[in-house]
Length: 550
Figure 1 (cartoon, rainbow, N blue to C red):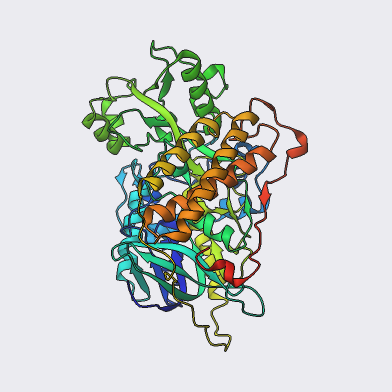
Figure 2 (tube, rainbow, N blue to C red; figure 1 turned 135 degrees about the vertical axis):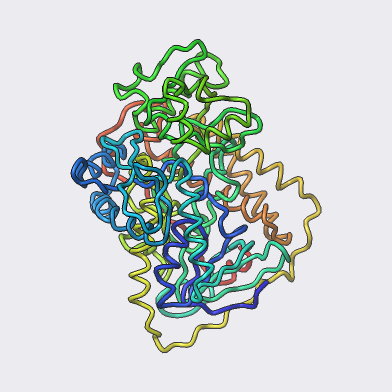
């Protein structure tokens, strides 16, 4: 473990949000970026679709993107947030081009010094072609460019295999004055050692919490760490009931988490039953281009009522060269698993994909805790409302990384006070775990009952059953955490159980169906809940002693 460091800014997370902020600040501050694994690992790497941005204002408009976002958000988007994000879209695309991101043009891949017109694709919920992409591996293209720049920048320190455990605040240390974030405790996953890291500002860019479900399109790192840490530090969270399920993940025992991009349907892919019958027109006049919540719910309903393991997605009516050119990554992976998408349909199922809620922030990424910021999927900015519009996620990462960086830059002037000494991690009353099976069993049980009871379709009875289960698991895990040395699995399970509790509490409060939250007991939207976010307020720590490995 590196020795405790004092940085101007510590960024927890090395995806598009975290690295973008680091690069925008690195000329003005000392920035340390913590990665749970290698720097490039995370959800950003697997984003296939692209970045929604109005770069062709002759055929598109900010107003249209604004309206599409609001329509997908089902009455819960914050208009000021949507306005800020949509209007900054072209600017962040230009910034990425200057970094050398190889976006696809109408004539092929983007040359770093080229100025060819960008190829735009269309995805579900969009009224125009406005999704800028790098073939079907946009996240990988952006992440690769950001990592390359970050490794070369002398103002950025990259620390890999570091797992954040908890934030350290003035209140937790019993310090007088305004409560503020002072740093965090970090587990070095290679050595097993825990140490405090101090910083003037801390940025949560930890991604979402889709690993709380049994089936997910996300990598194993999506365990809600930032949301859980912020809650324990006294920050509000919002709209956690709105978990987005991507309609189309490849159904194959060896295709763990492999996403079939929204763009496949945007370019003419049709959803079919096993007998070849299309079914989406029965659910929405937009058919396959309906928003993700509608498509996922339609697939889920057809699978349950017909006893199906999957439905099919068919784009074989398009020329083979078109498919191979537009979806090379998807084509190659499907072929490896025995499916030739140029000739036949491919089997797909919904899977947990995106956390629309998170840590409550303002338009600058500020949380309730002074000097703590949250950006990207772990944040609740009000952009997505009750359902995220396709390809608005990377856009949000980029726009709020810039906004938060500018705010932090304006607050970097030293205030003259010495940084307080941070206490070391106390392991005097813990031992090595004697039964690791407890953690693995609880992990499996949590993900299974969340999938069964708090998934695409919910009922009050299912949610109450899940709530009882999560309360028991919380007690077991809390006891385990207090008595044994921390491990990667234990820390992530502790965070997931807390996130599961927040999702269930939020879903029980919202007695209506809206966007991604669908309950059979209240199947229609209720006007009383329009423009009402589900904001949960955490309990405050009564004493600093309660924080000792609390």
